[in-house]
Amino acid sequence: VGKRKSDGKKTKNSKNDASDDDSDDDSEEDLTPLNVDFIFCDTKEEYFHGLKMHLHSMPVFQPHSSALADLVIENVSVGTVIGTEDDPDDNVFGFASVLNVTTYQEQTCIQEMKKMCLKHCPNERKSELETVLSGKTKRPAGFMIHGRMVNLPLEITHVLHQQLVLDMDWAVEHAEGGEDERKSLDFGVFVLMAPCTRVNGSLIYKYFDDEVFAGRAEFTFEFDAPKVFGTEEKQVCSVIVMTKTGHRQAMKDLEELVAR
Image 1 (cartoon, rainbow, N blue to C red):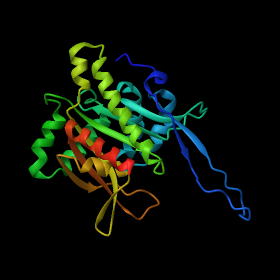
Image 2: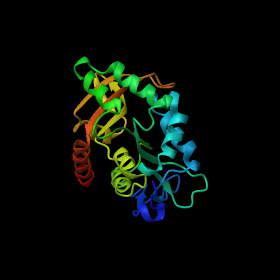
Image 3: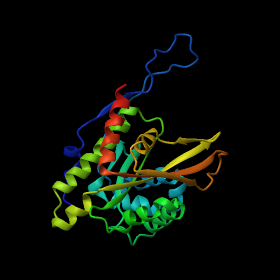
Image 4: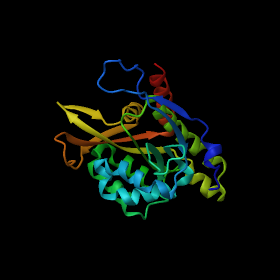
């Protein structure tokens, strides 16, 4: 897909004050507010290590973090990275992408993600999920994958997801490969594999936006994820299956939540 360049596509720079309080004269150290200007960029090779780091932090993606990072970079038409201006290290503060389950069906990481979802899917939903992941639906399904620093400001998280929506809409409108390519980018269903922990019987989402998406899902289910070294918390993966309509409704919910 021929796509707009980053400076034309990503239009919003956001400033985050890490601290709003003036330091006290008698404080032991001078705490100076840190201003960070975030930019929203297209994926590129230089972001590989940053993308892999975020993917590796999520238990279900750990075994395939390198392969998935490569796919996110390749999938430049539908993907956004949060960075900072003129960063020589190309740090990745967050990212979001949608990987077509048919386009990448030969990739081992996608095959394993499908197997994991189907293995743990409740019987009453299994045939439905099999259809979604088969690639035979009228409109394609995609694995929606995102990650970020957990202390990223709420408004930046909202903009990240907004940019992903703009990516999808733009890619459909400007598909250069004809009708087949346009259809491959016009997603009808999204599948998220959201990292969670279980504390005292309650499911805690790592990213609050995944809980918002779950609230608009056609269905969700959970399964135990591999244990993460250095933590005693029980790791869980919540599989969230939502339609395009549900996703757009969740985006409105997210906007309202951030505006409070």
